[in-house]
Length: 77
Image 1 (cartoon, rainbow, N blue to C red):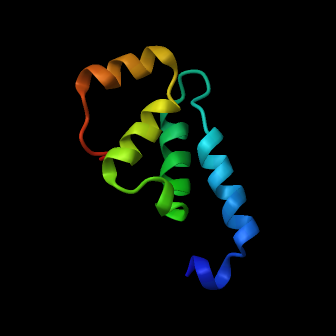
Image 2: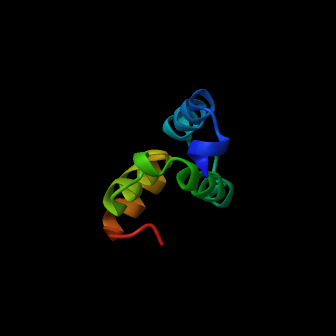
Image 3: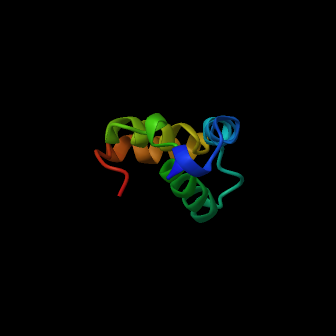
């Protein structure tokens, strides 16, 4: 669907948005929803699952990152 309906330039913009996505304040719900939406559109950036988890944790605030790293999640879900 993306190849047919989304020009390459738009796909690059979405990839850049995913790459620069950061959690703002303590609003983890908004960050998670935004990340999930972008991850669906930029599958190449978050495949395999371990890469998706790593990318998600990278955008969290430092305090929240520590909590997630301690839990050692293996999947995004």
